Image 1 (cartoon, rainbow, N blue to C red):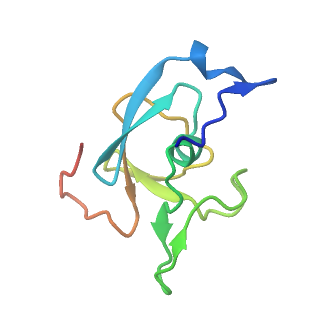
Image 2: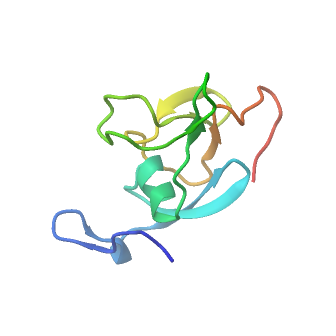
Length: 108
């Protein structure tokens, strides 16, 4: 079951957006142009984006406006971004911070 909002009075309908493929922790997901990483993964049922550095507890989207930094992920083997603010793009390779090993070359 998808959690994606398909009809929205302000953001339009996803039927009119191009579909892209993204990869999160080695698994392939479908997203739409205009999605943020967070909205695309939430629509696919992914709730945990990273794990807390000390407690190890799962972290996901909290504020969804870029203030809290709970949704940090690593993109394309290079930068840490806030998933709630970063738009998806075709072939984007995303990793949880706890699951990422520098130089491991993991991709979909």
